Length: 287
Image (tube, rainbow, N blue to C red; front, side, top):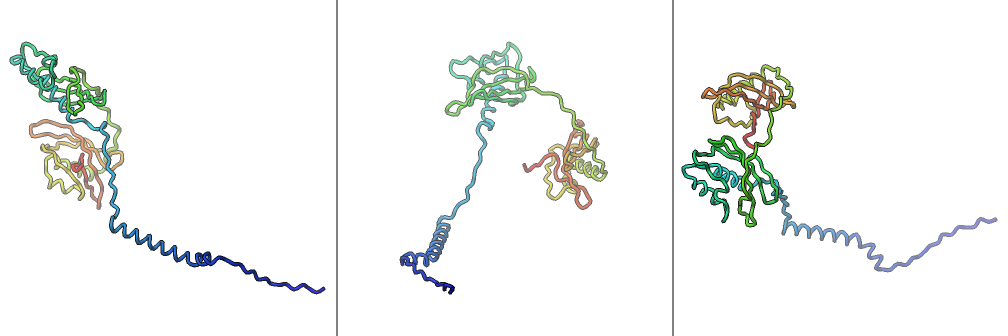
């Protein structure tokens, strides 16, 4: 049987001319569009460049201390606790700016028939806020007649922002306190070279000798000398802090009047080129 011959067929397909042109010119149009968008973006950045957005954070007002209200309470407490039997009207006059029309003279306080009392110092030691616009301050006041007393003073902020008393004051007890906790077991410094540097630095620090102190300070150290000069008498102990980046020195010192002090100083220390240097003593004066 004769093998049948294979035949190759040609298929002719017709397409619209617009589709052929679109397929051929589409890449060029896309490239032109991208170039145009780039030019527009460049023009926009040139005419109106973007500015950095600075986020500002503020402390919630509820967490801010009202210093004006504290001062108001302290000033009232000083005037309330100051009196003289020889001039009882002076007490009423001193408190008059705090009391409204029809309020009880002297805010209910009547000085005794004899004697006097003055406030040596007073400051706020406790505060609470029973209402959003009301503060109850506990004011500690040292008086020459009654000794140390604690007085609560209620202060409110009026709608216009003015301060006013919210009622009568009250004598109260001191805020709770307890004895100092026993120090944790420390790791004693057993390096004579470090001990020598710390003792010498503290001697110069306490005596107010900056030029001598500089010899033991690191180049980046920031140290502020105490305003009163003290004489270092003894280094009682020297222990490492838990991170071993600083040491705690307990010293015995004396002032020019002969008063004796036991003081504790934390010093940041580091070993550099075979010698110990101090980068901070107890506090950072720049913060």
